Image 1: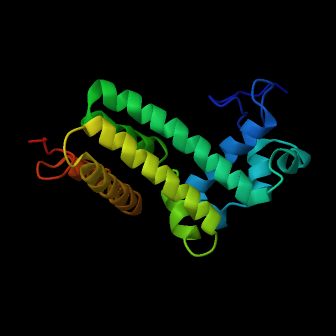
Image 2: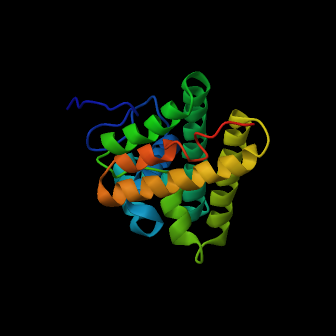
Image 3: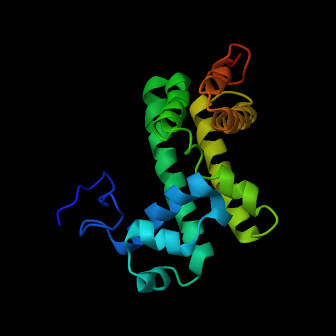
Length: 196
């Protein structure tokens, strides 16, 4: 049976193509499920089903089990997101940065926002090693945004923008209303302030 493949190389019912390794398929499936269902809502059986990878490959590539898989999936998706955002922001500014997240929410019918936030909220008291990875990812994003902003107090502004953005994504998902992201660019917010 010849089935259609999506942009990740997986078929409509999951499974991976020869162009994508079982480890990559597992990481992609895990990242997608974490965004939609969080840490505790994502099970290994569902990851295996969505990835199409054989069960043995899970523990071959990720001997630490679910936690190792989650950590690597978070790192991978955070890195991919950071690269996308850097290229968008560098060429088109903060408006494009916010539009990137608006598009993500709309295309996913408000099921996908930040790949780190839902996991960080869930594991804060249960999985300190995963929380450390989430914290490191946020620090990387703060520093990258501060570098983009430049000027005095850029790290403080970057943190404020990240706080606003994460809150806006959460509210947009909750209310299924994209206008919350427009508030991040309101005239009196750190995202719109100019260095003096």
